[in-house]
Image 1 (tube, helix red, strand yellow):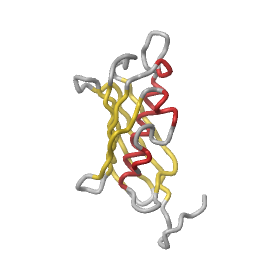
Image 2 (cartoon, one colour; image 1 turned 60 degrees about the horizontal axis):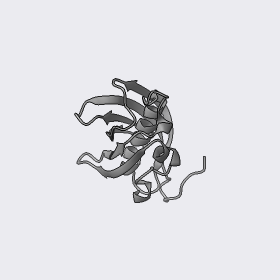
Image 3 (cartoon, helix red, strand yellow; image 1 turned 60 degrees about the vertical axis):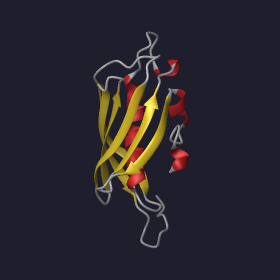
Length: 146
């Protein structure tokens, strides 16, 4: 999982100014991830306001990473089934924001997550919930083919 720190394995995350800095599992075996977002010009409109799609990119990635942090062995997220994104305040080029993703519930085939982007005053800038399809390795430890 450490190889996913920074841009999470997706160059686009770094290009818009975000990076993941830490992850773990809490006492209920639910994963989490944290990071920072300093929007670049690539993330924003000509007025310096980050587009909602960029929020969706980062929040989706944060939830995926949090879920993968909690999965064991070769199990991984396979696809985002549902994603809801709410932008509540503008994120601006030149400011710095905190990213956080958390697993809400983990079932056999799906996981549920939530994520936020917060400003320096700990106010929610955007938030998201999502449902994710899981790809489980079989009992022998091998990964089934899609």
